[in-house]
Amino acid sequence: MPITLQSYERAAAVAYAHRWAYGRNPDFYNYDTVGGDCTNFASQCLLAGGGAMNFTPDFGWYYITANQKAPAWTGVRYLYQFLIRPQPSAGPAAVETGTEEIMPGDLVQLSFDGRQFVHSPVIVAVGRTKEPSSILIAAHTEDSDYRPLSTYPYQKARFLHITGIYRP
Image 1 (tube, rainbow, N blue to C red):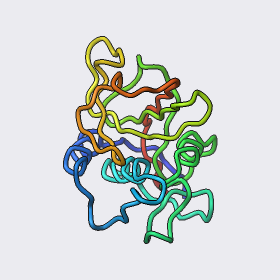
Image 2 (image 1 turned 135 degrees about the horizontal axis):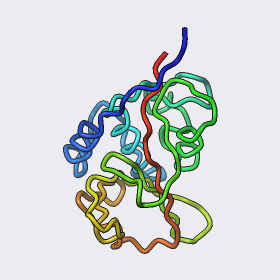
Image 3 (image 1 turned 90 degrees about the vertical axis):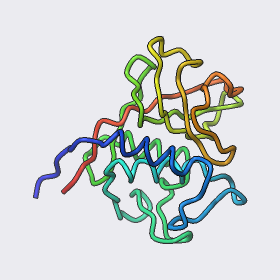
């Protein structure tokens, strides 16, 4: 059966981000005390946007319980690798882009030391200029909603434009 790229429901992802930016959905474990909850939150937003889970061991994108999840569900680097994978497989897909292509519902990953990306906020609004001060995010760990990207002390940012959801 062929796998097809279907639309990503950006409005649903953003609505979920607003709903849970300052709270925790009880359906998911809160990883704040074990490395941070930002990528778990980003994954939840992607799921709300229609993301089909991918139950491939080790290299998929899924959450069953706090201890039964893919590394990509909670790990910044692993989520990036999953989203930009070269071969279609179930789940959300993305391309790395500049600010000119970003839209609400996309992700930005931040590096505070210029070497390692360690934070995965969800973009909830983008101003006309698409400058960091007009890119607004929602995130966990340091909970925020409608926070300007420019208020983070990051050295590098990579933007992930969600192209759609692969479904079998």
